[in-house]
Structure formats: C-alpha cells, structure tokens
Length: 172
Image 1: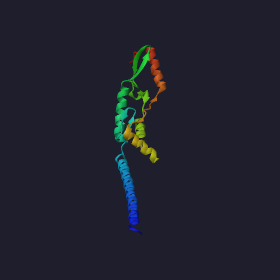
Image 2: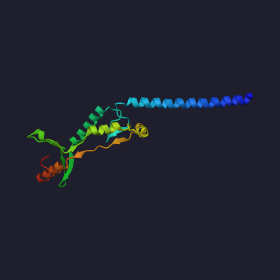
Image 3: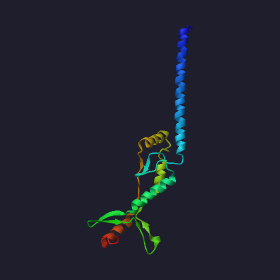
Image 4: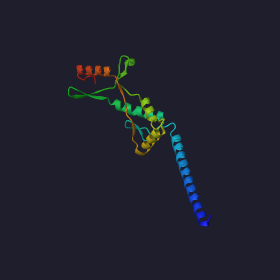
C-alpha cells in the first residue's frame, strides 16, 4: 500500500475514532448531568412549578404544603364577596357555631396535600420523554401550574345566602 493511501486511511480511521469518542463523552456527560439533576430533586418539587399563583418549585412537600395552606388561609380569611340587594357583603368561608365549636363547618374546602402531590408528580412521569419535557419546560420557562381546585358545600352556602337575604346582610 502506498504511503499516501496509508496516511489517508489512518487519518480517516483516526477522524472517525475521535468523532466516536467525542459522541460517547458527550452522551456520558448528558447522562451524568441528568442523573445529578434528578438526584438533586429526589425529595423536592422540580423548578418552575406553581400551585395556582404560588411558587413551590425547589421546595420539599412539607414546605410546599405549609406555603400553599398559608396563602389559601390568608386569601379565604378575607371572606367571599357576595352582592346582596345591590350591596357587597362578605361571607366568612368558615361558619362558626358559637354555642358548640364542634358544629363549625367550612363552606369551601381545598385539599392542599392533593395539590402538592400533583405538583410533586410533575417531571416524574413514567414516560422519560414526558418527564424530561416537563422538567425542561419548568426550568426554562417557569410555567408549570397546577390549578387550585376547591370543593364548595353548595347546600350550606345556599343556606347561608338565604339567611343573609332574610336578615338583610346583618349577620356580617
């Protein structure tokens, strides 16, 4: 084999070897980074996740639960505005029975632990593609939101509204 062809062959083999080694190194680095990222958030919610308007990304479940509960308590503590005969009255979402505190009930219930579990599940899908799509979207765009859902005790709310209309909003 002539020397020139030999040098071309060696150059060709060496080029493909370097390309292959670089590709393996790149894939290994991406894999190591992915594992490190996943391990960093083993017991925390991935970045970019919100429950309603409340940012919970990067927090453990317990802190997320406390943060969301505090925000909801503050929001619901302002009462529920309701228009009665042209004027706005505010209904307390917790109806307190002064004679017997055991008879106290809530007109609106929010299952905060369930919301936090949903937030924690983002980026943890069984499909790797779906999981990494959510992780990347949350990290890059900060827009993964779990909507706040509530259960309204419709019967008791209607009773409270009927009572308010009978007494003209004087209970509040």
